[in-house]
Length: 315
Image (cartoon, rainbow, N blue to C red; front, side, top):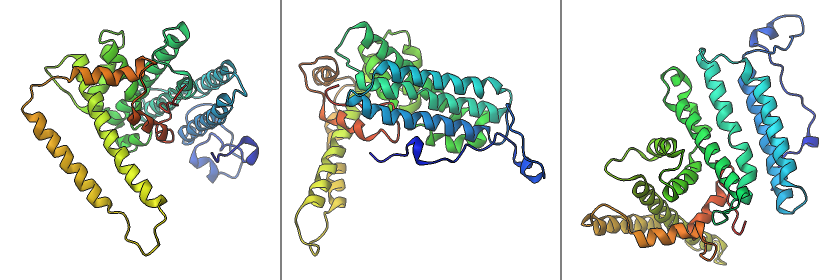
């Protein structure tokens, strides 16, 4: 995967100064507090951590480094950013509160970007329990910060940009964990984020709600994968350049028709779950003898959008 390495450039970070400092004849003196450049500097330094993680994940997969070393580096660099910038912010000032929430959303994904490679739902060891706990709490921290950026009244001037930080793919972890344990300590937080992402729903238990959403995601992702396969086959075929292109519109029309037929078939059914099919679906995450559902492999392509969930098959 092409990426920028530390030795590929020698451009220093911008100075932490206000814009007006460049109108003066003297050389600007960097500040340790909030300036016009602070939010940008925080994002630069957090992005540098994430670039480090992308490089080290390759090394982890090749067993060229150790998890403890990478984890220690990520934690220490995250703490350094928190001490350098976040300790100087005043939450009573909206733009500085926005900066704190932005940093929280971006930093919360750093450690899970490493630990996700070692996640095994079926493993009940203390190490796996720790990984699941970190991933769950980090995904909730990430989404809560992003949801606040989108909905808080005092942050409304910057709400339009909030979706660039978070597309809520990390909701997968709370969904599965809440379905497996509806009474887990983080149940209220997870339910609130599920309502924020998918909308509120009344008259259902937490497990029923999560089960319906998991089934819906499975169906939608499976349908998308079928469409992607059709397109991939067309591109990879040996037809001549004069042949007609694949009829993607027709494929989408067939998909919409199948969705309408499914809704009509389910309209007469009572609300609830097809428990057998749902248990088989969830078993793909919790039972090593059951293959992981094919649609879950779609998360491999989410890494550059939301790095928390790039599950690797067989890890």
